[in-house]
Image (cartoon, rainbow, N blue to C red):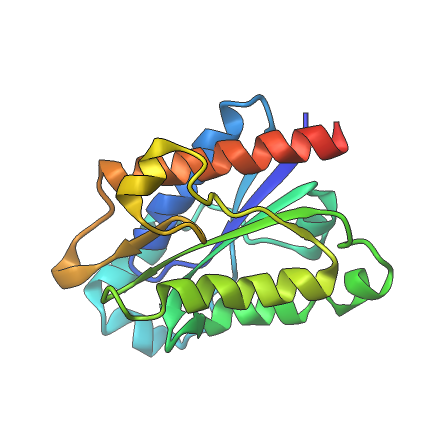
Length: 197
């Protein structure tokens, strides 16, 4: 069974909920799964000024922060980040920027990789945030595995690049988005199992 690392950053919890569903889908295949978060880099004052951000930070305090050892361990990497002006959050970028040593040693090449996201509007960067992750995965030499339209749920969810959610007015991911996320986790784990099994 492959090792799957679901690594996310989430300020108020939407990307976290997608990450949980992706991890569950990967576990359904028998994969070994680590659910990990990118380290918080925002100032404490900024976090406490947003009650949802502060509450989420407290609720997920026990989730381990991703390390380079986790990235090296994984046969499959599934990264999730909220969209920040059409790209990944700085917290995720900090983690990515630490991988130069692994990349230089060829330890990222051949891993299966996929991405997911959330934004506040339908055209707020869902696809560009995921394809920004794809740019990184291509440089690493990964095998990019999007969910595509490989399951009927994707015809309803509508984003072949990766699980995504539009977080309007404090909404949280519903069953449609979570089912799509579970499918993505299963698909990535199954393909990683075929390649690394």
